[in-house]
Image (cartoon, one colour):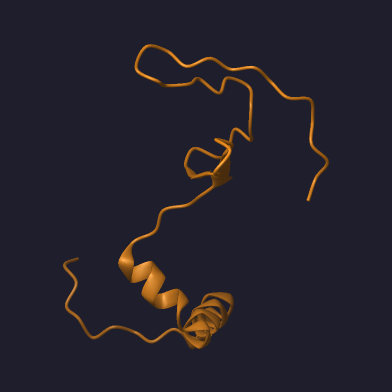
Length: 85
């Protein structure tokens, strides 16, 4: 874990929203927020995925097969589906 920087003061607006401004990594746009019993809020970067993506990730052997297939195009299987020209 990286060392903590100096705390930054942020204020809530009338709707209890907060602007993070320059805080955090600009690549992170979703967070899972945990509230501790002392009121501390911990923002953990989060990603969203579809149910299909989550199901795929539960089968690491399929993920590895996909990676191998993408790395070696000769493994591709031609589709017999009709495609308009």
